[in-house]
Length: 153
Length: 113
Image 1 (cartoon, rainbow over the protein chains, first blue to last red):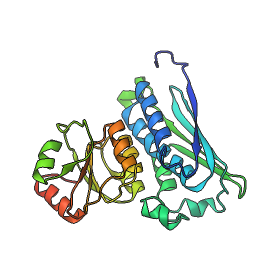
Image 2: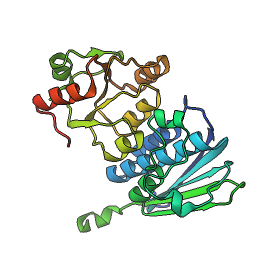
Image 3: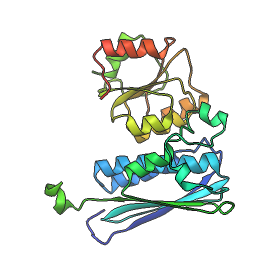
Image 4: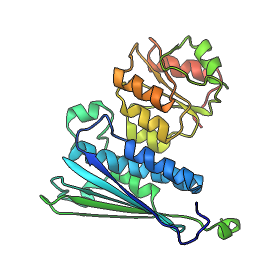
């Protein structure tokens, strides 16, 4: 599949807020696409962790959103856009342990304030833009090693 | 160590169907915070938790865990069990609390790794 160096694989998943039945399905699907494309294992692991956290944020905090991915020989890029109420203070939201999750979400083991920090730790680039009332866009990139560079890593 | 030895050694009840009990367990992780598990567990780990909702299956599938042990007599929700069967995730249950399960796993030689 990756024989052609110009190959780009793209797709989009739609996410529905509070739909805990399908929560995680988009991340699992992305993982299996990356596996089929024979992306290196550590990049798949990091993409799976980051995508799950971002997907769960949309499920937990917003009415709806989408996850768009593009995979090139150089990187995996995933963009999450939602229709939520936005993040007022992004720096505060990035603080480990900070969460606005209600009790019932915390009882499920979510809302520990580790989501955004986990995304940051597992990606090479992460951008968040948000306007209160206008939703949030989160984008991350995971760089892929080129096969030829293997011996340097 | 194989999962089947753990199931036997700890008298665990296997909840999911058609699962491979011959899988190797690489180590163990105990936590009820999903972000903690997804970030810090290792591939092939056995996960000890009291969370019973279906999202635990996505975590186990994404991190390729060898199985989940539900403690304190907790049983999986119907949705959780259905999802476990679909994804081929081994779900086990015990009436013992997490402390006891972890202690016994440690005695069997399972470590956090």
